[in-house]
Image 1 (cartoon, rainbow, N blue to C red):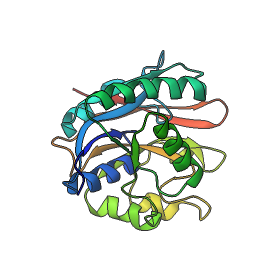
Image 2 (image 1 turned 90 degrees about the vertical axis):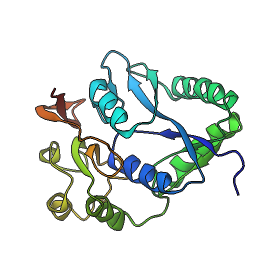
Image 3 (image 1 turned 135 degrees about the vertical axis):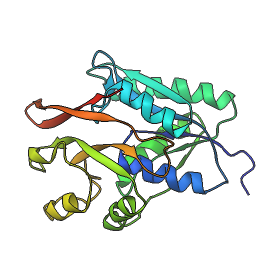
Length: 225
């Protein structure tokens, strides 16, 4: 029995976060006090996923959990990221938070990196979908009624034409065998706009598709009122 069950949730806005949050919300042992998302200053978009903050705000409002934005610079170093995260974690720790949850699936080095940083402020990590089969997890996401769109593709691993596609069974069937079905190796990132954790569907339209840094293909998503 967990006596101090207050937790933060590291929210990317993508499908693995949504699955992990869904699993965690089904587990009444934890009280999720806030979602925590990294935002890149200047761009005013979520880091890596490249989603506009306006859509992040609408997404979180539909989920119904408060949001803590962690602002980092465009060329943020690991040291900057770690310092800003530590400051926020210490603030929430004073409010009784003892856990931070993540949507990681199988990258051992990433899990260790997170746990080592959390240990510095005496907070524990939770990994609700850790070691779940990624093909099964991807299919479960679809079967549960979640809807997502691909916002970023690493063209070193996947053709840029996948940017802007719906994350559905057709998408999964078209993926090369070398690409993880959940994109756990960073092959692609997504934005979830509907599903069982949302009160309302997030409405948007697709904007332009742009290659950045000669490698990452981004599909812009534009909020619709």
